[in-house]
Amino acid sequence: MPKIFTNKKFLVAGGLVLILLLFLLWGRKTRGPTGSHQVYTVETGDIAAKLHLSGTIQPLYSADVASLIDARIKEALVKDGDRVEEGQLLIRLSEEDLISKLETDRSKYLDAKVKLTDVLNWENSPTYVNSKSQLETARLEFEEKDKTYNQNVQLYKGKAISKQDLDNSRLELERAKANLAGAQAQFADVVAKGNQDAVQKARSDFIAMEIAFQMSQAALAHKEILAPYTGVVSIKRQSSTLMGQVEKSLSENRNVTAGEILMTIDDQTHLTVDVQVDEFDVFRVHLDQPASITIPALPQEKFTGKVVSISAMSSETGNTYNVRCQLDNPSPLLKVGMSGHVEIPLEEKKGVLLVPVSALVKRQGQYGVYLLGGKEPRFQPVQVGITSDTSAEITQGLASGQNILRYIPVGLAEGG
Image (cartoon, rainbow, N blue to C red; front, side):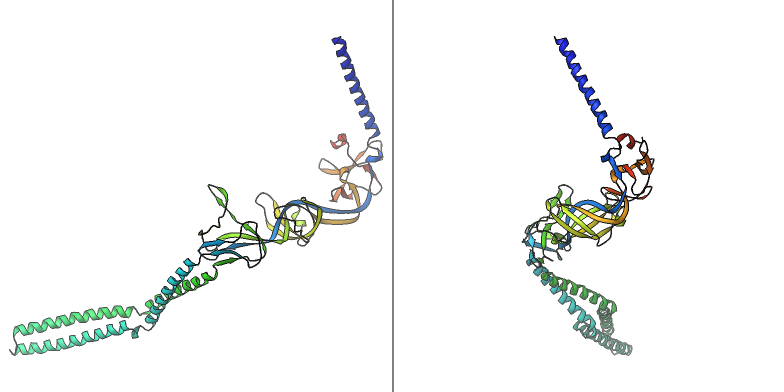
C-alpha cells in the first residue's frame, strides 16, 4: 500500500505540471504580441516633462540671535519651540557687570582727557612753569657764585682774603654749577613730555579710552536681547568632542561672548520645500518656475508654489544642487522638518507623436519600438524627445497610425 500511494502522488504532481504548461502555452498564444491589449496605434497628443523631487519643509527666513556684548545671562525667557513676536524679550543679561565696567572706563576716559589737555597746553601747565622757574633760579645762583668767585680770586691775589675764603667760594660755585646741571636735565625731561611724540601718544590714549567708554555705554543698551521678527525659537546646537551634539545652555550666570549665536528664530509664515536637483536637470530649473507640492502628512491638502532659490554650488554629498520651492498657501498645520514632494514642470509640447514609455526598448545604445505589420514584430529605431511619467515624444522613426507593441515581451526585451 505505501508503494501504490507514492506512485499516485507522483501521478498527481505530474498531471498538475502538465496542466500548468498547457495553461501557459495557451495564455502565450491568446496573449501574444498581436493581442489587442498589447497593440498601440501611434498618434499625436500633448506631453509635459516634469521633475519629481522629495525634500523637507524649511523656513524661508531664519535669523540667528546673538549677544552683541560680553556679559552674563541673568534670565532666559524662552525655550526651544516657543513662538515669539517681533520685539519680544528673549534674554536679559546681567546689568551689574556692565555698570561696573562702565564706571571703570569712565574714570580712565576722564584721566586720559585731562592728560591730553595738559600735554596740548604743556607750557602753561604747573609742572612746566615750576621746572622752568627752578632752572632760572639755578642759573641766577650760578652766575652769582661765578661772579663772587672771580672777585675773590683777585682779592686773594691782593692778599685781601685768605686761602680758606677762596676755597669756600670755589666750593659754592661748584655746588651752584651742579644745581644748574640738575635743573637743566629736569627741565629737558619736562619739555619732552610736551613734545610732538608725547602729544601723539596722549591723543591715541584718549581716543582708545573714549571708544572703550562709548562701548561700555552702548553695552547697557544691549542688555536685553529681543526677537528680530515673529517666528519659532530654535536653540542652536554645538558640537562637542566628548558629548556629541549637545544643546547650548541658556542658564543663569552663563557667560556669553560678543557675536555668540544663542538661538535662531524661524519665520514659519513663509515656508519652502528644499529639494536636491541633479546636475543634468538643474539647468532646466529657473527662478519663479511654478511647482505643485504635496505633503505626505497632509494627503488631502494640495499646495502650489514656485522656485525662489537655486544654489550656485553643488552639495557636499554629490553633484546635486539645493533648490528651494516656496509654498504659496502654507497651512498652519505644516511643521519645519516635514517631508514634501515637489513636481516642477520643465517643458510642454502639443500635437507631437507619442508612444507609451513601456513601448521603448534600448538595443546596442539605440532606442526603438517593435513595429507590427509583418509576420513578426520588427525593431524600429526612433529618436526620443521629451518624456513624461507615461509617454515619450518620438521625433523621428515613426508615423501617426502605425501599430507597435505597447509592452515588450521578455524575449524581445533581451534583444530577441
